[in-house]
Image (cartoon, rainbow, N blue to C red; front, side, top):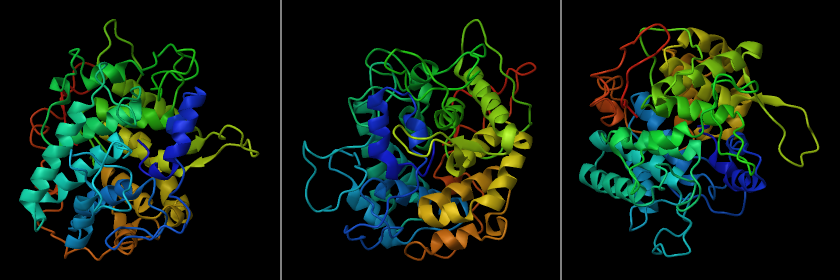
Length: 415
């Protein structure tokens, strides 16, 4: 899941309608450009929040908590006010005093990440009971709009896609719900949906990768963004994932009966090979673009680093992290709070100090984009409690390896 994706939401939807199967890659665009929209007090960033307001706020919270900071009450209050009465969130509501109605564009991605963020800040919040209520309402709404195949689309009722399903899995794990037991009316789990996007190791173009969605002809096309998101989700993890131990080289190995754990490790294998070529992933040109050359994709590279580290392949992720340290500064400045947060989480996943990320102090840069957070809680910054309970049932099973290359036995894991 590319965490700086919300500014390109409309573009992603348009790409999906074109049937290219590449909407996930489209989400790598930075935050929106400045616009006449007034930036609300309490919101992180200075750019148009229409497509990414809730997303970037939530991601900033997750990165701050990972660094030991607690967001200010003003910032948390802004996120509370964005929630609709039914528990859902839109990408952004300019008038949060007006009730949500049938015309309100509810967003599964924004809702899922907001649930994770509010769960993460809950223990240090001035309003823990309000956070609990908001988290439960958001989780209940996500359950109510689960598709029959077990997955989720970007908006409720839309066809399931790998990215949306993955971010919802992160929300489920963050709240202590086992994704494998979160079944649809047809008895399908989110993992059942993810497996439908997995490419076999025999696929020449993308062995082991995940697609965002099938194209109009039903073909699955490898997508690095979707692969990073699904690799994490398949292991029961999310954007706040940490390095797994013991390490194991990522290999692609099809089983006679596919499992989500094996598909996730196959995804890690695809990402490792893609990164090995240049140290970074590339963003393909968008449909209709005049410049048809590929450009380095900083956001998806950061996602891939987290996915590899979380799957036990931190060694393979290291060259990409070093590339990010040297090449991400301009991108992060343009992308704003979500970009800084994404890099912080990539650093954290590889046991790298985000305050000394190349020549940058990512934590200071993120904190400067919004209301000043509360004094860091150094005693809690590395605990499961700091992550909003993400590790409640992950601790029991992480790190177990079954056979050579079979991977971790994880029925569900932290956010």
